[in-house]
Length: 541
Ligand code: ATP
Ligand code: MG
Image 1 (spheres, rainbow, N blue to C red):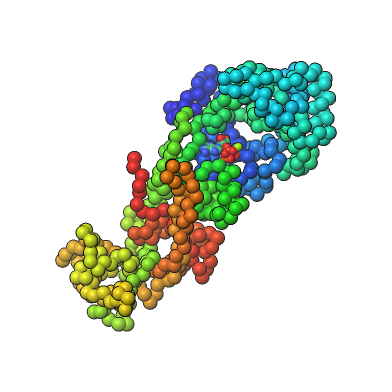
Image 2 (tube, helix red, strand yellow):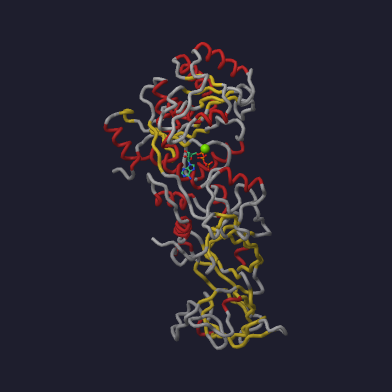
């Protein structure tokens, strides 16, 4: 059963045996930055499509542009694809096809289908025409194949400066599709390439290189984003003129756009270069590395990509859906802990001075198999400051003078009195507890409406908690702008077991959200947590 329009196309091709029984896709990143969540969509799509048909999927570094590429990016991309849960059948570098691409260019020249043009980039642009008006032919368009071949050889030999000459496909300056108006297919760039070094000073353009890369690898279905739809005639033209048998087929789908998110390597790189973020893996970044450090799981990201599906029309996806997916994934997987972010001291006046009880608390209410832990409880505790109100609002069921609440996993406590400093700030709550109400004792005498969390003052562990909001927010014109307050770092107090957290370990901090011990900043003695996501979903189905 086809699940989307791409699979419909593949089903038809299989039926007609266009590529025999083969299905072969590829994920072709340019190694000029780290992968982001949009790339994850493309990765999931290419790899799962191949899996579904028992086909193959390549990882191909589309490294035809020498200037912006780097091996750091190559390594991060491999790591990210694997982390997402996929393994490529073959790994290729487009740059290893430079010889073949050069031969292809020569073939076009010999056929009279390509020519060397001396116009500058600005002149070519000016000649290109508009959607309403045809372009103007280059005065160099009628050079003979011999002349073109000699000039192209000289370009390759390094005789010309960058931009002095280009090789153009000879198609149709009056085509209604501007991409077909004699596009540039080779340019001069005197730059060292991360893979081929200084061997080349001419480099193929994307629209010429990509179909050749696909064809060389025997790709059947070349899946790309919608902005390449208008380039498809050129993709087909290149392979037709090269007389490639069974050429691959380009299929376009809508790229992922997410609210509150910049999804362009160029911008993300500028955040890194300008020091706006800590690096490509800053937990606020929509990069795969950033999401990983933030605490996202591969399962949640794959689930998200499946839920958004593939469409033929661009749209905007709510980031709350991504957040929903990580909550769903962690809900029954991680253990819960009690952490107080903004402490207010509680003294239980009728509790013995030197006594400590070990309270047994379940680690995950939805998953018994995660077991229980013991948490110390004694006369002095901390609770959240906003779990107390001197004058309660309507429907406020937590601590206020005279009210009884359940302390999670422990006892019912009644707030008797708030102690204040000279400035009138509440510094301490005096409470009493009812020994009959111990959790797990089967006490059924009365119910209380509020349950709050707490930590034992004597044994509480100091941790650092980093809470994030979106890196981008909408201004009054609906434009994405940088959020000046996208991270807040605070100290918090945790129950003792949190002191043993390992880097990368995830928890639910009861009533606060899901957290991960930061993989860079967590040490044996210092625990730094990133908030992955809070508990409240704003996502509506
Ligand atoms: P960016 O514009 O962020 O630099 P890109 O398209 O230039 O992205 P590539 O490395 O060329 O980045 O992309 C590799 C693959 O990922 C391409 O097939 C591209 O179509 C796909 N891709 C990139 N961004 C998205 C997105 N937002 N949604 C879905 N697929 C994407
Ligand atoms: Mg690109």
